[in-house]
Image (cartoon, rainbow, N blue to C red; front, side):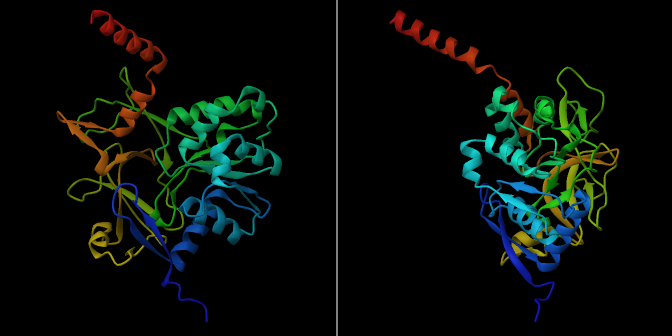
Amino acid sequence: MPPRVKEPALLQYTSGSTGAPKGVTLSHANLLANIRAMAEALEVRGDDVFVSWLPLYHDMGLIGAWLGSLYQAAPLVLMSPLAFLARPARWLRAIHQYRGTISGGPNFAYELLLRHIRDEELKTLDLSSWRVAFNGAEPVSAATVERFSERFASAGFRREAMMPVYGLAENCVGLACPPLGRGPVIDRIEREAAPGAAPSARVRRTPRRCASSPAANRSNHDIRIIDAAGFELPERREGRLQFRGPSASPGYWRNDAATRQLLAGDWRETGDLGYVAEGDLYITARVKDLIIRGGRNIHPADIEDSVGALDWRAARPRGRLRRHQCRHRQ
């Protein structure tokens, strides 16, 4: 007898790195709805080739790559995550060799390729078959998206293939992704906006760039932005992101307190802040990571970008000079 569609199919543990791990209950119906929605969004065909180094204990690797390919009867080229981390070029080499059409990973993976692929290796790669390069599972850097698209264009990579996506374990994996062939949309907003103010397209000297994932309704999956009182906000107003749909988990395994925090009627809390502009969703920060100082909202991504932009090679000699001067005075 086949399993009942609403019965649990698997438990997906989440938040283990920032708190007590919680088991997200996913039913057979949840998984099938999410796999179908992603296949619809990516227009997956039987002749597609999925190349993945993502671990199978991660939702993007297990559900997105493995179960998704199995359901669509599409070939899957599966690499060891350690093989990719030891030599990131192996990922691109596999896409080149097997003519991969769908592949991706978190933003850091694209950064590793930018840092470790030599110009000589780049000349030997043909990435023209890569039609979907999804980027998600962590904050998507607009700078990474632009730099990757520019540098790997010489190997046949098309900017239109780059696809910033958004998802979470409580929705199996995928929730929002852009239309095929559109390419990433980058919004430039003011860093100095007052708390709760509408992010503006007008830019000051230090703009913040955000990559979007369209907030389009796909297979009855919806999202909305709400304020602290629970009222839905208009475009370009930052607030809490909620979602609902057939992929939404019913709650956490044997954790009633966490389930109550997740559920908001038919809606689910993502724990993320964001805003919508012209139909596109922009994630700005995790609710619990937001820093409020002097009446200003400080996003962790801004701090990371500022630290990453420092010229550490110029900073080190000054440090050695100060130590030398201290020894001389003694």
